[in-house]
Amino acid sequence: SVSETYTLSITSTDLLGLRLTDADVQYSPCDADEDLSSHYKQVNAANTPTAIDAKLVGEGNCLDAIDTSMQAYGYKRSVLEVRETYLTPPDVSPARVTVKFNTAVSDAAASIEGSFKVYDAADPTLELAIKSAALKYGGTAVELTLS
Image 1 (cartoon, one colour):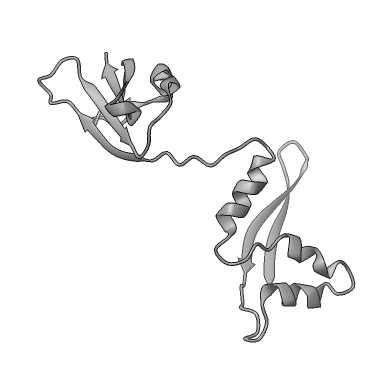
Image 2 (cartoon, rainbow, N blue to C red):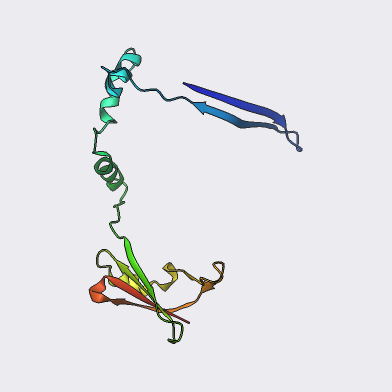
């Protein structure tokens, strides 16, 4: 069940304002002998009860269903993960940051320095300038040279 509270007001420019001020959603499980599909079909018997069948993908199949749906729009899930990062010691100049990934990255990754951001650990609001980027370790890492 869902309970919502709205507030109506007149703005300073004499427009009517409507704001959702509270929402309470109560979830409850289906009956012990009933699953979501059966429940939906019972509640929507007069409409299109089988419409739910095209939406439910079954337990453990969510990621595959999302990937299939997104492919229609040209999207593909990335499997790229940052595994480790290294910073050269403070006495090494120029400073370099190496970012190691779980798999090789394309050559294009090394040519898009603007896609990476490095911040000063002492002042996390200070972004450090990147002079260049190069692929390392068979393409599984990008080394960023700082200015």
